[in-house]
Length: 114
Image (cartoon, helix red, strand yellow):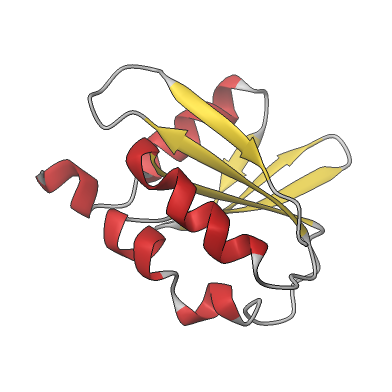
């Protein structure tokens, strides 16, 4: 499945745009801004979501943003959520799983660290 090997960048932009956010940045890392809220958005390919890149494992570099959203294909939500739950991250996070079959379907999973 070639589509799933690419991060869902356009899908992430589209979802946040429909929610009323202005989206800036090129590539898989972007900022979505609306009113007082800025969300650091990262689109992850299937491989990145299942392997959980090192930048996710250590929380990445210092970020001034309190909210983080990872956007990936819907069949990788569970494994990414389990990996993120086991890490003490310095921000609130959520995962958006988009359908790799096309369309506007997506699922939001809110994160809680244990």
